[in-house]
Image 1: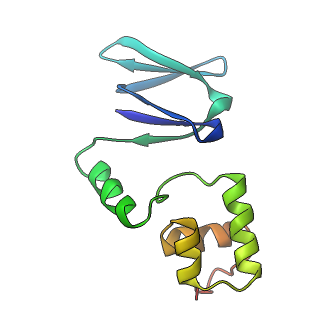
Image 2: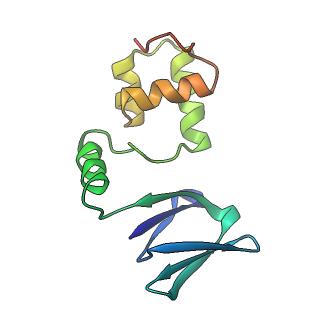
Length: 121
């Protein structure tokens, strides 16, 4: 099972075991039969759900951090930048964004706001 994260925080679950790409469209297959398709430009992320190991890990983690393992929206990045500029603590960032401290630090590094050897405080 795949969760297809789409624009505008929309998503759908697709019972697929294979994907193919055709002219800007992602086609989802199960047991050799097409079970769905979405425009590639509209897809933000793909997530395996219901798998034995990672699915359970994600579900358990999201009990504490509801946005863990989800893609970042532009609005969330803007909020992160603003909170970081206001010197929010690590715990304040976690509470406001619903994400794991490591995920927040990783995004700050990608945005060039936190150095490679700097720690989130």
